[in-house]
Length: 119
Image: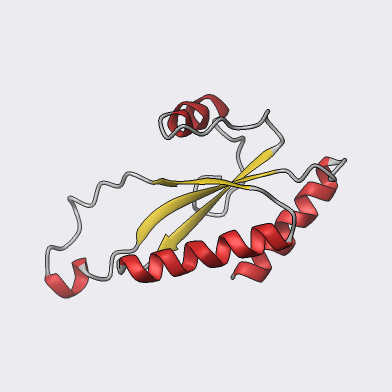
């Protein structure tokens, strides 16, 4: 996705290269998903949210593969401290496809449920 709610094909090669730089080997296309998460700036709250995502993914049988910081260009935003402090941290979460999931439709349903439970 592009972060605007528009579904587009995942840039598999790009994600593979990005995650490989963290030592993560992604499964074959169609066997992983990427979620875009807007996080608070507080590192403790970020860790708490990541923990919730990891816990729900485990409960739903979807392996958590890792997170990626999304680079942003905020040079055109206001530098006023109260405004700058409200800019969220953008991260992507990578989830594998559970071994028991046989169809793409079942995987999509599981991801939908996972997203609803997390949010």
